[in-house]
Length: 398
Image (tube, rainbow, N blue to C red; front, side):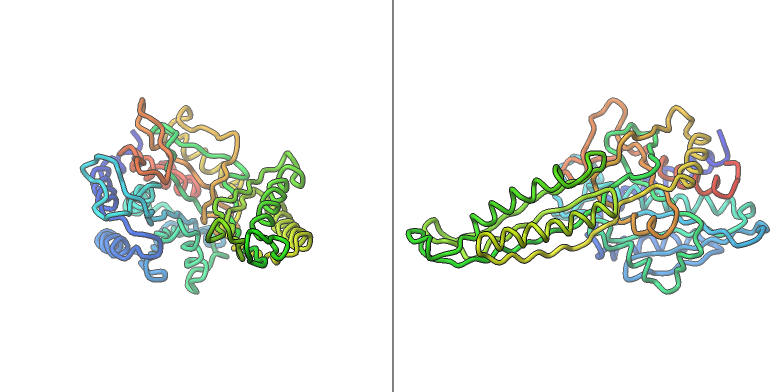
């Protein structure tokens, strides 16, 4: 057993209790007041020589300075864990299930937070050997794709100084004790599409005196669904899903307005821009053809998340030393979910690592569902993943 594994084993039970506390007391995005207070209190008890600073109202930044002599420019690596929950009523029968009605940790952010706290504790034992600094980002608001921006906007955090950054996320389809990663595109951008179709309302018996927005909306939806299949290179990836349509008040009234909402997801910035332009172009065409007005609002969400090849190499080397080569697996394809960790990797070379959360022999579980769970071993895996990357980045044997 390595020193890293021994140190992690020594705090594993304590970090599991932190995880259970967070799971029992979930908080929604940008409202993680109790969570931030709780984590900051634990940090101030354990960080004897470092900087702890609030970022916004609920984010926390920790800086640990290594004491080994540095050769040349100062090197800084960052580790990030998110901590917000979701508006879901938990239906698991767990002794530590959510005590907050209608709110639960259904995406594993409680694990990420406990693991990052554990990494702070463990990595302090290596400061005499670290020739640089470590930053730890306890981030709020990932589910609303806004929390990362609070760190980017903080005037005290200079991302230009960072050499690299790593984040972790639980994977409900991967056995606990294993980790997974991929070079290049990992997760997609996620943009919100809002469309309002406005026509002329009137009596259903006299449609010639109206301009029907429901018919126009139907045409628009069909046309929009051809964009990915006919304007995107088949070797690229994109998903345009329209999940909401609302219009009309009664069966014999031609409506005045129809509202449509959906999401656009891509793995490439140029594809993203092209499709956004195409959505607007098609909307203008349908509006002209069917004599309605169509207003399109696109709210840019997270960017495509791209794993840097150099950071992936560092992560793989460190993870294989700690987990064993057989427990480090590689994803063949990216996934179309979104993550605001991409705001960091757009500024700094980074790597996003998935840690197994499925109990061996148990069923896979999908995030954002009422039955979501994480195996307790995932807390230890998260600590080891964070620390393995950090130590390998500084060339330190774990």
